[in-house]
Length: 213
Image 1 (tube, rainbow, N blue to C red):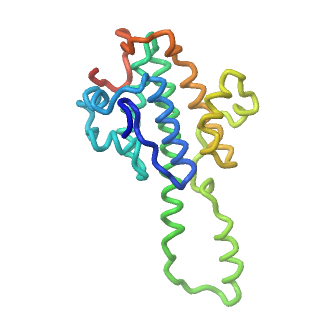
Image 2: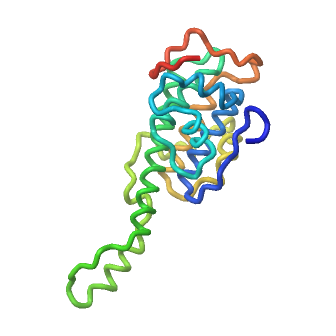
């Protein structure tokens, strides 16, 4: 895994899952790069969170479990000193949306790689139907979330470094761009980690999921 506190980034082929993984690594950095052992202790009361599942959330090519992603988002955001519960919840909300996009993307690619069973159809309709199926994209099975599509167009200058750090993971899909932009903004709203060299979490934080430091 390299030096302490750093987790290996996997080579993920699908762009929305890759965006989720990039965002998780970005949040880990904002949270002062806690070690795997520290995160395991912090999430010891979360069902499904173990040393293996936490490590895999960062370093496996498989999509992590949603409960583990949610717990990590709450825990990591909560490590930032003077963070508010509203800021933590905003980060967790956007991670929820991003995981759903990644899960829909995974289902799309799984169905695309599985041959459809033969079915009877009118003569001459094969070509038109095949052409219709070939135009399908992951966005056809993804719900529209409540992140404004216009957010990127109005992107504040202060967000650009964070978005640039994740940009390679994006495709041309407006929904995906808006979700990850919303997540970048939520992370940017956390108190500046440079103001707190200790890494001690705020004692006033009351996250929506109770985790033990």
